[in-house]
Length: 353
Ligand SMILES: [Zn+2]
Image 1 (tube, protein in one colour):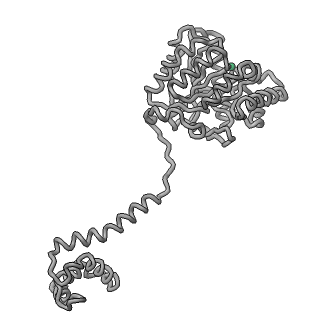
Image 2 (image 1 turned 120 degrees about the horizontal axis):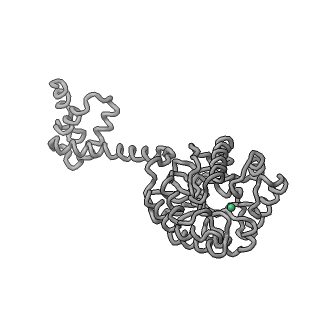
Image 3 (image 1 turned 60 degrees about the vertical axis):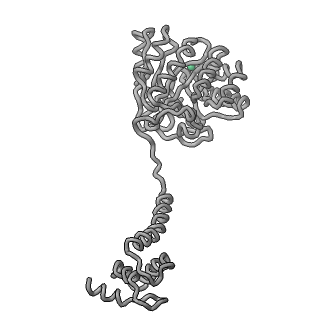
């Protein structure tokens, strides 16, 4: 230290040529930097004390000023570096994102990997078992349904990206879907409820119903809901020839386009009736097949609380929920507000396919 002080005390101020304690203290603080850097630092230090040149300045005054001067460019550099960092695309896992009334309806391109422009959807990371019961379905009918569910999950595993039971499980979205519409009574009621709660939903409509109620299809599309195909006349797809199935898809999609200006690339076979040929044929027609992971069984229920209970007992992130909006099921519109409220209370957002 004695050496350093001896050296620094010999330093003279560049203008006054007098020994300058202020500058010597500077060189005491930065003894080991090279000559050029030391000169730069010194000039910065000196410039911060111009008014005091030649006078002794206490280190307690000069040092904080100098540190402030040196730290400013460092801070700017760090902030710019942080901003320039590429952001990792992160998907929320659990818990699902909190509800905000303003973002209940997410633009279609963000709710799901599937878009009407034909972008490839990402297959879900996990395929759920299909859930939902009804006191009205027992015995052989229930056994047949259980067999169909097991077979459909297997198909979905074999045809990832073409056939969906549920959507991506990591997004925290729930997908309400309504089949068999539009109906003259139930569908407008359901649209009003969805609008009132400001949530997204998907309607799978038959060609015949679209033809019978073009104004309601326009209302569905005009309110930003997604529309998928559901055959022309609700006939089983596996009972059709390949030619007839292609014709039904084309005919329904042409009608949809003439009414809304848009084609769709999503289809739900009536009754969820599929086999290898149907899946291949629909894929060749650029149609993704969306079944469901919760069947509310609204078509078989007598008590609307049983429709809600199927959701309460089974709700999982990414669930696709099957309901109906044809005129045969007035029960659905009655319980829909409770369903929406329950799903919201669990912290989920609503997406559309
Ligand atoms: Zn149907």
